[in-house]
Structure formats: C-alpha cells, structure tokens
Length: 479
Image (cartoon, rainbow, N blue to C red; front, top):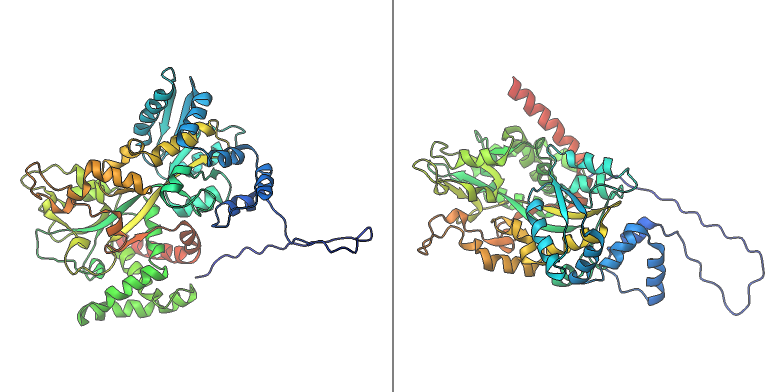
C-alpha cells in the first residue's frame, strides 16, 4: 500500500577550534535526541541501558513523562500511596468510550481506603457519543492543566493519528502488568490495552440457510446486519486489517474451499480489484481482501447499534438473516416463545467453518499529557489492569478479554464464561453463549485483531478507496 513516508534530514556540522591530543580520537554521534525520540526508545525491546545512560535519560524527562517513568518502576501499592497523597478530598475526572469506568472507580476508591480508611475522593466519568471523545480530549489538551486525568479509548487508527502522534495522550505501562506478560515497561512496545472485545459472525438458524464460510456472508442476495462504519469508526479498522498479509491469506484459504459455483460468483470482483491491490502495494492475496471488502460494504444492512441487530437476529421471524455484532450482546436476550439465543448460531463454532470468525479491537488506557492527577491516574490504570476486582466491571461479560493473563485466568475462574450457556442443572441450554475464550478466538476462530499502526497506514490508501465504495452504496440505496 502507499505509505506516507517521513523524511528526516539531520545535518551535523563540527568545527575544530583547537588541536586534538594524539592519544585517540573522539567518537562522533550522528543525529539528535528529542523528547519524542526518548518516548519512542522507551517502547523498544532493547538491552537495559547502562546506569549512566539511564540517569541521562531520566534527566531529559520532565513533567508527566518523568512521573510516568517513575511510576513504571513502582508496585501498585506504592502507586496507591502516591494516589492517596495526591487526590484525597478532591474530584477525579475521567472520560471513555465505555461507561463502565464509572463502575470501576468506586471499587478503586474502596481499595485505596484499605490503605487509608480516611481517604475520600469524588469522581465524574463522561462517555461522549458520536466520536466526540477525540474532539473533547484535543480541546482539553490546550489547557495548561487539563480537566481529565486519564481516558479509556478505542479506535487504534484515530488514537495514533490524533492522540499519540500529537502527544495528547501518554502511555503508562504498569510494572505488574508487564511482568504478567513476561516483559518490562521499558521493553514493551505498544499502547496499554485494558481488554480485547470481539464482534463475531452469527446467523438466525430457524430457516434453511447455512454459513460455513466467511464468503457466504457476501454471497448473492445476502445483506448482513452491521453497525455502519460511519456510526462506529472502529468498524473501518476491521476492513483495513483484512488487507494485512495474514488475514488476506485467511480469506484466500477460505476462497479456495468454496465450490465452483461460489467461486464463479466472486471471481469477477476479485479480478476487478486486482489492479487496486497492486496500486496499494498489498501482498499476493490482497485482491481477495479487497474483493471481500467491496462486496461487504456494498451489501451490508447498515444499523446504528449492535443492540437492535441482536434483537433482530434472535427473533424467530428473522429466518436466514446474519450479522456481525459484539458477542456480549447475547447476555441481555430475554427468552420468550419467539425470541431465544437458540434461534442463532455462532458461525465460527460450527463444524467445518472456514475463514475469519469476526474481529477484535481494544479498549486502551492513557494518561492525558496535562493530567491534573497523574499519580492517581497511574494507580487507577494499574488497578484496572492488574486486579480481578479492577477488571470486574468488564470481566463479568463474555467476549471481553483482559490483556493481563493472570487477570484473564482469575476472571474466567470466577465467571466461567466457557460455560456461559449452562443452566443450574449443568445442562448446556444455550451453546451460543459458551465463550471459547481469547486463545481460541485468536487461533482457531481466526479473529481479525486491530493493529493501530497498520490501520493508520491503510487509512491513507485503502481507506480512501473504501470511502468511494460507501458513496456508491449510498447512491444505490437512495436510488
């Protein structure tokens, strides 16, 4: 794909003003070190720096960066004590794409009170709608001291281009989270994910239609229900990721498993986008990804939210309809004579299913660059990512997986999502609710995982191409 390239020109000029001693020559270093470069270096997997280099790096840091650096070397209890000193008697402001931050904060306060029974903190948690969180954080970043201490945010593409490339949000990696993942804060490369959420292909099984291949969802006369990519922009990241070599390969393998009739239907589209795949610099299977994207965008039945899609699919009247929705929506289905979880099937759970089973995206945690309570923010982030109680606001539902393997294990032991469809008598009453877990979904289930960097690159070429498809689809609908 066409990738925007940043060309940096560094000119080093040296003037000799005195004679050098004959005992040796000084080693000249090329380039300069900026604060941005220091932040980038921190995330790379490198050998530990010598003590002198570490001291020099820490000296170069200031403000929020210095606090984060120090916090990354501290235990959660040490962070908690700092938080108590900083925020006792004050009000904490957070903002996020998930309303459950409001549920987690009282648990966090209760934890701090185990260390100091006299500790008190008020809080407010905002959940902006319609992608306004990026505008809100950008506006807040212009203040010398911001309103929001931290954020829980989704959409890796926009996070990178609007939030981290612009230095509005800062990544903090808790020491204990890193250790649970077999690394260190310095060595870890990436943002801090609270959890991975999955959207999965499912279909109403009360009719005769079967979906045994991910290409079946875009076969003739199919119009799967899907939250419109202009309503939830993270849905575009799913489409971008399909062009990555790994997932394009999965689509090619699924195509190869189709019968001759299905291949004949898809072949004209595959050939029509082959030149586009070359223009974008995609791999050998890129044309299969673009063909799948084209037929999906031009044929899905756009909805404004996953809840109504779920309500439609579980109704007996929705014979042969399909959709791609957040898996956890099944938790709230109220059984009746015509409505049941047993009216649907999870495509990837069916024997012999081929291809992608859905896609996964992350909720990430960041400090704001002008956080008014950085220590409290670090402690709250550590609490959510390193303890079962801290993650419980999200962990109680299937389809949301902690990025901390220890917390994920404890969460499964407590809520037993793998037996989510079992009743009190030990019978598997609703098999579709038996969550097979992150490890299964990301291997056998072929869940497409969001990569912020890849999405940001793909948005330039593939993203513009998708925009032309959506305009065409809108025109067809209007016509």
